[in-house]
Length: 102
Image (cartoon, rainbow, N blue to C red; front, side, top):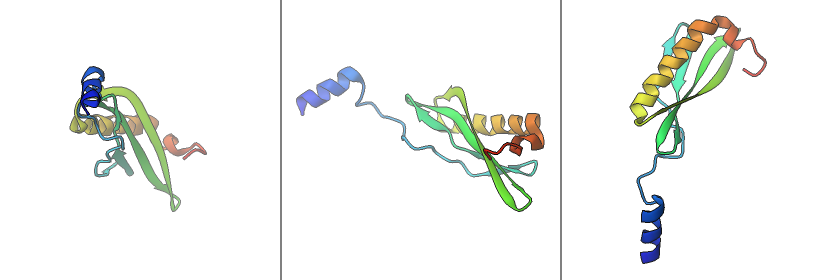
């Protein structure tokens, strides 16, 4: 047990770590789309990520995004993820769901 604590103190693996699952925020509606922020934990921080969905001809189409931006807090990552999704919707419009990958 002593060696384990010593190893953790040397490697930093005993420090509080961020949950390894994506933390999904409550979905919001923006210009006929549903935005869900799902920041990804990475290195003790959160990476900007989420999904954008829209119902087209009765079919729900979804596209996901991940950006390189990292944030120290989950709340900051959620806010930035929502803002980034809004920017994507504003820039791409309906063309966002033209791809077969949606």
